[in-house]
Length: 215
Image (cartoon, rainbow, N blue to C red; front, side):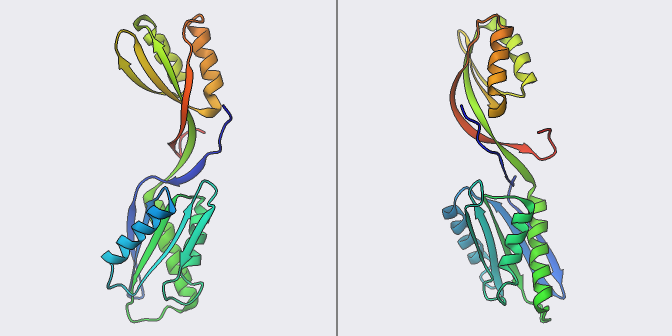
């Protein structure tokens, strides 16, 4: 099966807050798998912070950021949404929505001050959410006799495959292995079992891998 590209996104929703010259900036970074979910989430945040001066946002959807939208929500043009989009692109993340809510504190920040404040808030929200690399994994089905289970586990660990076994008369197991390693994994299982264990690729899905893990 041909390998697909990996991409980066954020682990989990996160929120941070900073104060700049008495203005409160609340930054939220949320993983979203589609534009529809991004818009639904944005709507919910706007309802929650209905009394805010501004609810600016930027989102990027698709493995290559094919869908990208942002809004200044009443701030001077180019001072909020674009710096937030720049922060998303700088972090290299997609399938993500960032919303920065501002409560005006009575002191004008100026164009440069707004750009810095919105960009910083978005960047810190991304850091708080944590970045993961989503890698394509093949789902490989095996039927493993109990006497060979220990051997199979050993080979699976070598190839960093995640196992989901079901214990019946034989062990029916789905092994999730990075697509780039599937061929080597299948060969190794076959060789180590003297040709008695063969896997069948049943599908593919993306799974997260921490940025600090070995690629």
